[in-house]
Length: 87
Image (cartoon, rainbow, N blue to C red; front, side):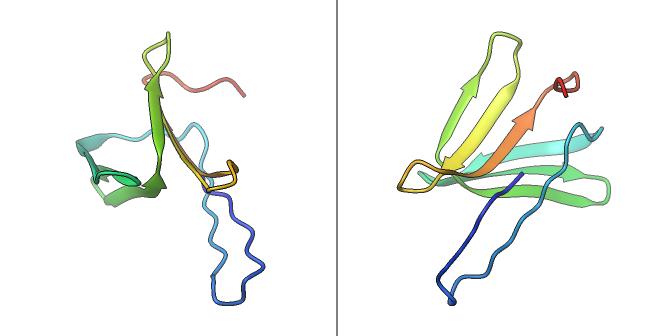
């Protein structure tokens, strides 16, 4: 998911949100030195997240990636797990 609210007219507001979608990927890649980018190659194209600043693997083995704005607000997240996340 990605969240943004811009008051600066030069910035475009862009939001994408998908939850618990079943995805089969043939390749995964994380690049950059910070902020970094992550991508999952699927049969139909790429799922791509840019502006990521933090990541962790939790106790359940889920990969949690997030991008925060300088003020600490969440701007983007990508959460990957073999099982659906709780609703």
